[in-house]
Length: 231
Image (cartoon, rainbow, N blue to C red; front, top):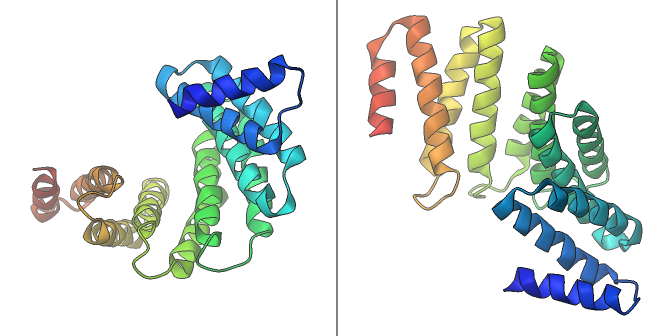
């Protein structure tokens, strides 16, 4: 109902020839994103990006970083759909700009740093440059240090750092990387409450890492642990 209302209000404003204000544009952009999540219609994503660019030009200073984050997220999503490298480059640049303008502290900084790490990993997956993997890991380690103890977002950061280490092990073969990946995956699982939406992904990633280490070490205990988590 809120999505439909946002569309109705936007169409009413534009139909009267009025220039939609910042709040109306924000509602419209969120409505487009919500509809894209349901329909996967590329036209909605394209329009959402265009609206968010307009929002970035109109944003008051205290909302500008949130608006740029929303724009980066939409462009990153388009990259996931199309594989367009310029989209990845722009999303990463926007996320880095946001981090550079964010004071270091537990409120916004670690989550925005995590976003940069996500884009860095995507660029590594696209280009294969190990320096992107190392940079993503360094950022995620910093995010973990800055989060408040007990912050639910720590689950995703521990899990993502584990994934990065597993990928680096696959490329470089350092046993310390796979061992730390398992430790971080276990830590993520320990602090993930049963209703945490990231918990299924944490379980899946940890099981994948344990199976990989089993094939490397040929120790049945790692496979047994993966089976136990998979029950």
